[in-house]
Structures are given as C-alpha cells and as structure tokens.
Image (cartoon, rainbow over all chains, first blue to last red; front, side, top):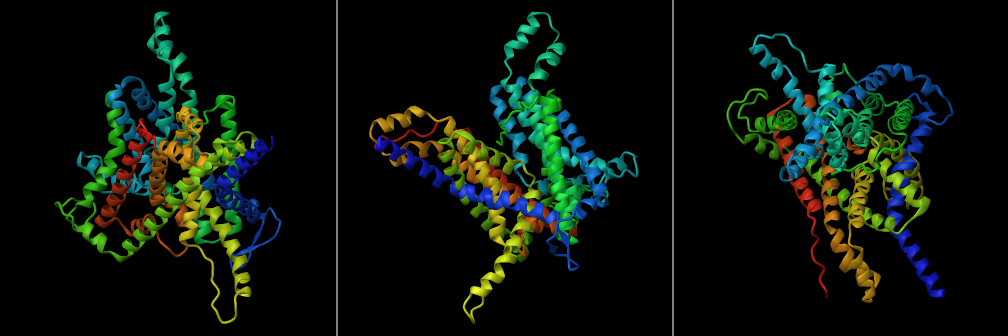
Length: 290
Length: 275
C-alpha cells in the first residue's frame, strides 16, 4: 500500500514538474496580459499619453470614433471568408476525391506550404501585381485604360483569399477524405443523380470541415493588419490597423485596450453564435496545422 | 475540375514566382525586367541594416524554437498522463494560444510587459547598491521570444501529442516488463519514436518566429527583425533589393518546411536498439 501511494505521489510530482514551465507561460504571457489589457480599458489617458488608473466606461463610449474600422472588418472579414470557402471547396474536393494517391501528398503539401511562408512577402507581391505597372498596364495594352485595382476593396479581398486559402482547403479536405465512398455508391445504386448525391451526402458530411475552416479564417481575419495596410492604402482599413495606430502611433493605450477588448468580445460572440447555428456545437476540434 | 485546380495553384504560386524573378532583375526599376543579374543579392548582403535585422531574427527564431520544443515536449508528455478538468483547462489554453490573432498577443504582451517593467524598474533601482548602475528592464529580444513561444510551444504540444497517440504502446509495456526504469523506457523507447515530431515542431516554430511580423512589431522595442525591416523598406518603395531579401526569406522557410513535412510524414520510426 505504502509503495503504491509513494509511486502515485511521485508520478503526480513529475507531471507537475513537466507542466510547470508551460503553465507559467500560459499564466504570464496569456492570462495576465489579457487581464492587464482589460484593466487598462477601464482606465483614463493622462495628458502625456500614459495610463491613469480609474474605473470608467469613457473609453468604450468613445468606440464610435473608430466605427469605420469596425464596419470594414465586419464587412470584409465575412466576405473574404465566404470567397475563400467558395474557391477552396472545389480544390479540396478535387484533392480528396479525384486525385490519385501518388499525386495527393505532393499536391496537398503544395497547398499548405504558402501558408507557412511569410505573409508579409506574399502580400507585398500583390502590390506589384495590382499596382499601376502590373495588371492595369497589361489591360491598357489590350485597350482597357484607367483601371484602378490597388487600394480598393477588391485588392483587399484578393489579398485575403490569397493569404488564407490554404487554411480553408485543409480542413475541408480532411472531412471529405474521411467520407465513406460506399455511401455515394449506395446512393447511385438507388438511382440518385450525382448532383443529388452531392447535395444530400457529400455536402452535409463535409460541413464540419467547412465550419472549422470558416471559423479559423474568420478569427484570423478579424485581427488582420498587413493585407489592408498594403492593399487597402488607407482607404480600406481594419480594426487591426486602428490598433496599430492607437498603440504605436497616437499612443492612446486605454482607448486602444478598449478597442482590443471589443475585438476579442466580437470574436467570441460571433464564433459561439456561428458554432451553435452551423453545427449545434459539434464543430471539429482537431484544427490540424500541417 | 482539373483546369480549375491548375488555376488555383497558379494563383498561389505566380505571385511568389514574380518576386523571385524580379529579384534577379538587372535594372534599378522594380517593374521592368532588364536582364538577369544577382547584383541585388550582393547589395542586400552588404547592407548593414538588413544584416543586423537578419541576426536579430535568427537569434529570436532559434531561441523560440529551442524553448518551444523543450517545453512543448515536456508538456505533451505530462498531459498524456493527465485526466479530468485540469487537462481540459490546458487543452483550452492550447487552442486559445493557437487561435488568438497575433495582433492581440502583441498588444497584450506590450501593455503587460511595459506595466510590469514600470513597476519593477524603480524597485530594482532602490535595492541596487549605491554607485552601481541598476539594470533597466525594457522590451527587446526576450519579450519577442516569450511572445512567439506562447504560440509555437502550443504548436509543438499538438504535434508531439499526435505522435504519442499514434505510438505503439506495446513497446512501452514490453520495456517495463523487461525491468527498464521509467527513465530508460523514455530514453530508449518513447524518445526515439517522438523525436521526428519534436524536430518538425522545432522547424515549424523557427519558421513561424522567423516570418512573424505583427507580434515583433509590437514588442521588439527598438530592435528590428527582418520582416520589420522589409515592412519599413516597402513603405519607402519597392526595390529589387527588397525582392532579393524576400526571395531569401521564402527560400529559408521553404527548405525548413519541406524538411518538416518529410519528418512528419515518415511513417516508419527507426527501429529501437535492443541494448
């Protein structure tokens, strides 16, 4: 008995020791900072720009001054997510159903690789392509003059699709891959048309992948800074751009904190509503990264 | 369907190709190709600001990757022994750390660290012996490494845990039946099997940290990482030199990624030595 408890305690002690650095990290780099930002958001700004401890809702009352940033984010983040979904689905379907196993791995890796390379550099390529000397000059050669692409909502949406497509393809691919092909055979044996089989079997069964993909892309888009900064040219800006301005340029940390907390709150509310609406809360938890 | 896929792949890779192509542009103008040359690579490598930023990025990425693989692996091993609400709490934190946008991490770390430093610096100055300059804590390498590690550590936990779940348990039982101590079992059975996942985690962590812009932008203080340098250069105007730097950055990520993919897909772990 004594040895049993001895071993049990030793095991628990070891588990605790192994987990200690990670716990410290979560505590000091995730929980504590979020609490500090929440506290700041109820504070006041001193004349020199610093933080003065206080408990006021003034910062939150000020939020409408940044309404455009919120509005843009809430328009273009869902729009970009939807556009990525529509473009990603056929590709994911092709990879999961049509491609031979020999090519599958290579093609899949080719989709994922761009996501792991610098978004900064990949986005900046589009300044080039959409800028005056890029596509507009090619269009001018065939007689279509005066097309302006850079610094428009269109450029921002293209940048979003380009940046986040890999993240959308992968979860949809995983759920389509798991789909039992015998279901489709059974449907066709029972006289279903391919279109009807797709609508009634494939599409509903790939729902978890679509929900996961949309959720991941949407959350990351809510905090996007680079794409609107490069391709929106000060006309199409997101909450992320407002936050950079508030924290690094105009240095109004209490107000910036209120904006950040509001962003996180919108994110949490949208995602939980979306999960309830789309899945009855059963979205896939395994957000795969590779 | 096939044509559609080819178009999507072109969409994904043509912009990267354009950057690579124009980095070899002999001309000074970014938008007209005037012959092949590697002179911009020479210019970039001789640029002291770019080399400083590169060194900073390498130090940060190596430290973050090392810390993450170490802490991520120990945490994955510990979590595998746990059940119940504590495990659920950790799982929740791991997903939050991975999902939360980088900009939120950047802001939270900036505000929290500056607050803590403002509190600790006068304290340090007060207890420091007379005549000796007290240390002053400020944002720098350590804050970027710490903030990157939050994300990359969680990533390593997921990768290593997936490997542990797919591991052959009978080997561990066999090792215990043959009177190996827990440490021997870990060293000779578990570690060789999870090592590819740890190494892949290291490489992915390095890639993430090396490529990150937004977190560093908030917490790097007066230092500049390579993505920050590229960002400010682009703001001043696109030059072939920026293309050359971009091509090199893409090259580093691609090499590491292909290696990481290879490690994660290699199904057959090395045979465990009997001795």
